[in-house]
Length: 253
Image (cartoon, rainbow, N blue to C red):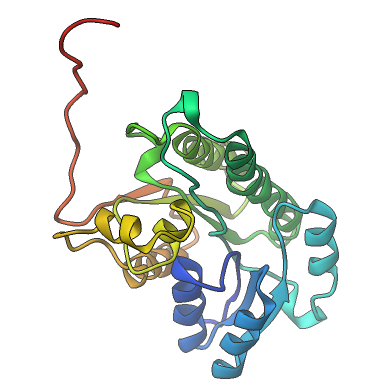
């Protein structure tokens, strides 16, 4: 299979790190981006196919400037993996932090849209490309405390669909990969402000998806032939499924 140029956001840990490592191991050229440049440089030291690139997706000017620094032979991006994102807090909406809401919207929605918009014209001009957005089952299955996080992932799902509506026949495709319960990353510790006990409780007595599972799915999508569009892919571990509707007994208070 021909070598690809793959740009991965949020590549310093978790899903992004596993995805970057997966493509680098098989010989693709990987542009690994994140805010923590030291971690990216460590990844590059272990993988000669990796180009580290400091990038905060919430800063449009910085993203544009960073992409302009790419060497000429790294600019023809074949696959964009919009992985950078986070969940903050699990408080019900009336008590939730507006600052946390703003950060999730800025990262999960605006940041993803910014990187996509800046990379997309080159793909269209070359007549080929794959955009893979990391969504979540939270985008379609609500749960208590998911409020803005779930809404941002609903945005990712619908943005992906609308990209495909705009890109039909262009040779460029978009896919939303939507994992359910996934462990072994910093995700839950970030959500609970570093509280390791709360994070561990999320995965108590279950075997969640792993970052490698997500990387495997992303690789499969990236390798589909040019005439195939995978609009979205929903993944859950065997220990998780759809729940019933919440019913509060005793009437409104």
